[in-house]
Length: 59
Image 1 (cartoon, one colour):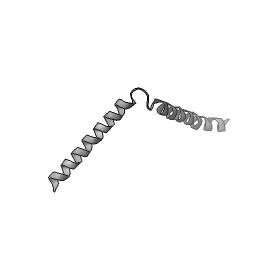
Image 2: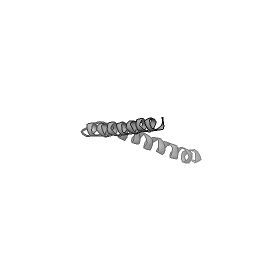
Image 3: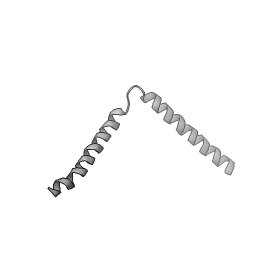
Image 4: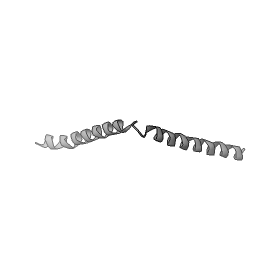
């Protein structure tokens, strides 16, 4: 019975990890996808603008 006790935690973790991945995949997209994409695009634009400003003042 020791082998059963040794196998239970990895099996439980594998099932939990699979459930987590499935949940993440299912939550992608949907009604808020455009809003989320716009927020990410805005954050990337701000980061790029800050990087460009940093290069201009350093030169």
